[in-house]
Length: 217
Figure 1 (cartoon, helix red, strand yellow):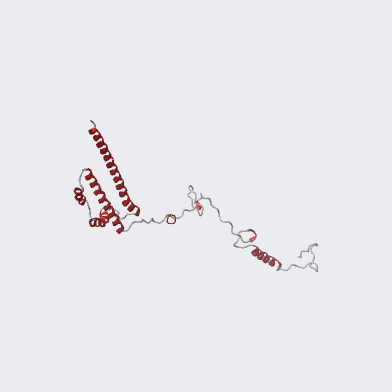
Figure 2: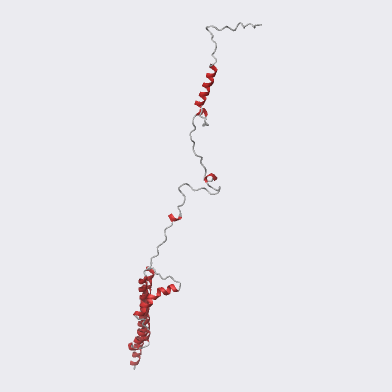
């Protein structure tokens, strides 16, 4: 039995044509193709646009990500102290006099000691009323001698090493060895002469007083 068609359904004619079977397939392909073009598979941004790199994260000076322990802040870049080898001065060079000059300084010190001892002996002898002939033998006995002073000066650096002391001497110390004893000797000579002058003045005053006393009736 045949079912009659609805009156609203018009038969195909020139004004209405049946759709082609490939129209749905073409629309599906066009939609998929457009989605692939608009969206980047490796992009997380909307509309499939390429994602631009953002700013790196900024960590505080007390954050653990910056290297802090939470109590002490990390140093500001560029403010780190330089290594010790770069800021510390190099090893200070020690200035010492050569061994031959050291021997000469020691020899000169011995010469001064010899002269000082002889002058003291001569001064005491003169105060005692001895003549120069009596004093000269004592002065020769207190003389060290040139050869002996030279030999002692050469042996002194080795003696210092034997005692565990430094056999080197700075130029400043060498100048002190030469000038300090000289200054002491000059001061001692001045004091000695001042004492002799004072004693002589006292004797002259005493002799004058005694002469006046003997001249009175």
